[in-house]
Each structure stands twice: as C-alpha cells, then as structure tokens.
Length: 140
Image (cartoon, rainbow, N blue to C red; front, side, top):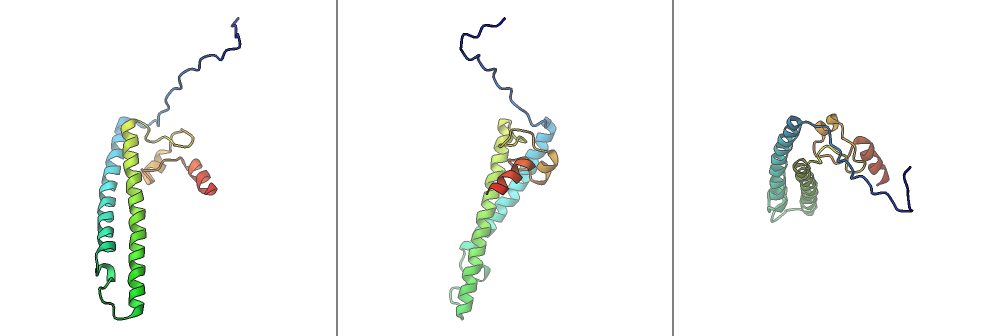
C-alpha cells in the first residue's frame, strides 16, 4: 500500500509528442518551405519597389487631374497592404522552418496534436490543426 503523507507525488516528465512525420517527409516540407520562401521574398521585393518608387504603378510626379492623384494614392495604398500581407506570410514561413529545426513542425500550437499531412501540403507554414484554426477564427 502506498503512503501519501499529504505530499504531491512527483509528476512524470511529459513525453514529447511528435508529428509522426518521417525524416524524409520533413525534408520534403523543408524544401517546399524554402522554395515558397524564395517566391515570397521576390514578391515582397517587387511590391516594395512598386510601393516606394515614384512613378511606379501609375504614381506620377505631376498628375494632370485630381482624380489621377486619388487613384495614385489608392494604388500605392493597395501595394502597401499587399506588401504587409506578403511580409507576414514570409515571417510564417521562417517560423515554420524554425519549427522543423527544433522538432516541433507538424504539431498544432494550440492543442499539441499532429496536423494532418494534407493540411501541411496545402498550407505548409500553418501553426494549427484544422479544428483549432476554425475555433480560433470563430473567436476573433
């Protein structure tokens, strides 16, 4: 019979969950993410050039009509919004590559369960399983 003298029994160290992805699959996702990163980095560079270069994307130094000025500012605003969005995806890709390096890639950051391979193939930089992503989306 085990005596309990009112003390908490020491907890077992939690076993580290794995995504179930094999080394070959992790290498596949690493390459996929690196390729995706290159494409997004080029997009970010192109959008930055378009947004910040005078006379790019129709932004003229001397517009001939007030409507042209409004359109030019609107075009630049759209480019800046796209640039921000692309930079966020680039950051997510870098984070996914970090998760591969530290052994947590493919695990949901919300519930800790493995993310379905099909989901990773469609969105390789995802942090959440589909259930948690839906839950988080409905909460925001």
